[in-house]
Amino acid sequence: MVDDLSGIEPRQLWGHFNELRKIPRCSKDERKAAEYVLSVGRRLRFDSEMDRAGNVVVRKAATPGRESSPGVLLQAHLDMVCEKNRDNDHDFLTDPIEVVVEGGFVSAVGTTLGADNGIGVAAALAVLEDPRAVHGPLELLFTVDEEDGMSGAKGLEVGQISAKMMINLDTDDPHAVYVGCAGGETSNLRLPVGWVRPDQAASVAFEVSLLGLRGGHSGVDIHLERGNAIKLLGHLLWVAGGRVSLGLSSLRGGDKHNAIPREAEAVVVVPGDEAEAFRSLVEEMGRTLQEEYRVVDPGLSVSVSAVKMPVKVATPEGSRRAIGLVAALQSGVLRWSPEIPDLVETSTNLSVASTGEDEIFLQTASRSSSKAGLETTTAAIRAAAALAGAGVERGERYPGRLPVLDSKLLLACKLAHRDLFGREPDVRSIHAGLEMGILGEKFPEMDMVSLGTTIEHPHSPAERVKISAVAEFYRFLLVALEKVSEMEWREGWGGALSAEGPRDELQGSEDRSKMNRGSYISSPGSPCRSPRASWVG
Image (cartoon, rainbow, N blue to C red):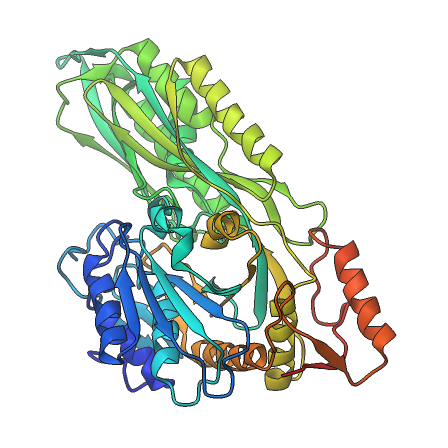
């Protein structure tokens, strides 16, 4: 473990991240992180305020000589997903994140790291005090509760922001510019069950645990087809319940709607004369699952052990409906985009399972870049719930954002990346919810992109961030801001271009972008390239 990250380059960025990782900032508990950001802004004597939703806005004047260039909003979220391994006693309400630097990565010890989106927050704060930063008028927006409902972005008042361009700092590749994101909706299912007292003399109780999965972010990692612990346990119990009599006493798994469950467990009651058959079935199916998931989840393990008899168990009918509902609900990739290579269009994640006094609770989190895809998916969940006799509450819903490829901000980012790295960046859409979707509805005329760095396995204790990629991301951000600052702001448009090549080459490139908006994502080597161009200041 290390005690200090502030010596890593770029030092200003890592210094701020080092402070943030010491501050508890789970979703809906970001007050101290917000106060830290406010203290930085006020120490630097910039206009800084906290709004009624808990967001923080900091405003910085343009670099001298760049006052007439477009205003840019840098946006990141203060909260993090708080996940830990079962054997870790870390208290997210009080304890700093313990970190390790190894093999060119920074990771945490048995918990999530909070690089999502702590690195974005730290990068924005670094821009505030970096003497190398050249930019037009800047606004910095630090939102709360992004990971658990996006209430910060939803609560932002339109009058707080004047910028016409926005760079969100919450994606995962320093050599990509993201121009679109998925929308999503959670569904909360409550299945009433009737409880009875188990026959203690003639029955045996077992705890079945499914552990050791990698989990990950239910958006950006869903394409990896990793196991979902709740789903796999439900499948196991459904198959076993078809061969032996089975009563469900409790079911538990998952913790966050946006994390793929890594662990799940159930307590079941079976007749004594079927106990050994049940144990053998579970062990056999455990070996089958280990073989099936040996590549994507090599740590998968299934255990079955006798436990103290519970005081209640669901009726045979209630057990059948509860286990059947878990087995029937879809989880994972549902549809790949027919237009954008390798982009998941629609997915759903069975994210949480728990047992209450009178019900089994299940939560799903569905995502899609298509409105119709999202509605179809959530309707199928409600239909499965209805067949099982469960009620459904439609939870948080947030909009996506369709890719916009004829973007002046995107072109500035392309030019910046080409200057730095000798090639254009990938231009992508992400299968995750970004605050671009909500803010895009509030500010429909705002030009938006998202930049970020290499963060592996976010939303899980395996989360780690690549140190060299953070440096590349920050350099990219600085040069992108400088490119935008070379624009001369003009009411109703946003800038002017001159091209070293013929004007018709420039026009042709823009026409192609318009023709393919929302259906074509350019990448290095693609026929759709930007001309050699520069902003007229």
